[in-house]
Image (cartoon, rainbow, N blue to C red; front, top):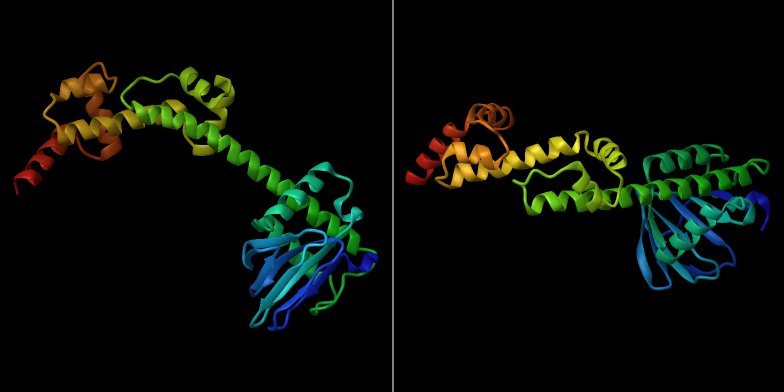
Amino acid sequence: MTADAAVELRSYAGEPLSHRHAWRQIVLPLAGRLALDVGGREGFVHRACGAVIARDATHAFATNGANRFLVIDVDDAAEGGVDAAEAWLDRAGRRVFFHVDPIVAETARVAALNTRGQPGARAAVPFAPHWARLLVLTMAERAGERHALDRCRERLDAAIALVERAPLRAWTIGEMARAAGLSPSHFHALFRRTFGSTPREHVTARRLDAAYALVASTDIALADVALRAGYADQTTFTRAFRRRFGAAPGAIRRAESRSKES
């Protein structure tokens, strides 16, 4: 494979085609949609979905209408000897289709502009390997960040599920952090960065939500509801309740009572 084949702007005709090649290939969407079947895995390259075709994998493709794709023939130079890039290519090749986030999409668009501007045109010889390497490394990096974020969200979801099981309980940051498998300081920082609020604020909100259900659907005295929600007096509870729901507990209860009678 020659260096000038590393990055190419392509359009495909409508008739189905099938072939295989001895190098990995990445197909990134620019316009239109490409139907792709790689070893029985079927899908489309379009909008925010790209594809990695493994070495020697027989693949069939077809499209209709106007279309443009950026195709990267991946060689060792494109991988750049970076383990993360090699690992991502292996994982993506097994799945075939992968998410193309806005940063990767913009990088692909700029790479396309650096061809001669027409489908079938190849990037200038001196720059083709660099564009290929940049795109592969960018996709690997973004996929790694996405995976890390997903793992963080799974940990936070475990803590949130703990609170959901007993929303009126006064959960501590330490208890929530243990459920997430994180230190309290790391958990607090991660929670705030992800949700824009602190764990304490989340617990308070969930306790008020549970208190709302007691106010609206039971005859439990409002003072007792306040205590269950962690408030020492009804005045403080009413103030917090009004801030969250826009009405006092008594008003909510009266409205619910009228609704049931009508």
